[in-house]
Image 1 (cartoon, rainbow, N blue to C red):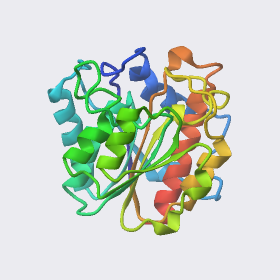
Image 2 (image 1 turned 60 degrees about the horizontal axis):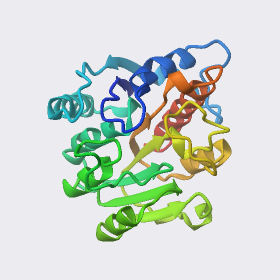
Image 3 (image 1 turned 180 degrees about the horizontal axis):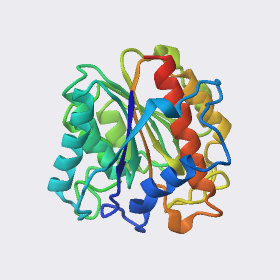
Image 4 (image 1 turned 90 degrees about the vertical axis):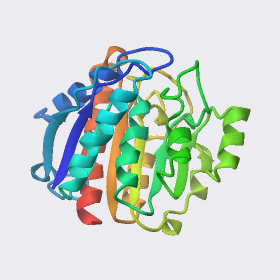
Length: 265
């Protein structure tokens, strides 16, 4: 069984709030009768996805209490031998999620889709910023390998951070360099929706043209080796969405991730 869990937190955003509404928007898209329960592989996925509700965060900036609550909530699902798909929320939620996975998986590969590396050592005095989750996760030993795809805004500081932590970073123009066959062991997938081009996913706070197509992202998901033990879909900002287009993209990703989890346990 796959657990679907919402994390309505956006207090650690650096530009706009709104992603706290993301879980509800993706759930609404998932329940729309405009599509069915099957993924592109024809695997019927939704009966295997159990919605366990939202983490009851206070949604306070820089809150370690919120982070601890997220970690505990994910740990509860992992203790029940569940694969977990988390719905953000801003990208700050990924650090406390990965702390829970660290305590279960001795070796973990994280594949990260994003326009931004999110490895600032600190941004605006907030170590839990949505621009810093992978810096915190690397410091805490939450993964053995981090592969970032779609990056197109890396600052000199973030390039230094990537070199420091031996991060593999491929821009949106370098996807041909990504070799999924080189990955080993359990895989966790983190998808920031602004990794997609704004023409595909306009409902995000940080528009960064030149991103991935939806087909490129779906092909990446399909290419990942198993087991795919967890994933998150973050940074949907319904306040910026057009005709619920990005919410439907998020719902599509949930179904395709679930199919990959079921096919490659």
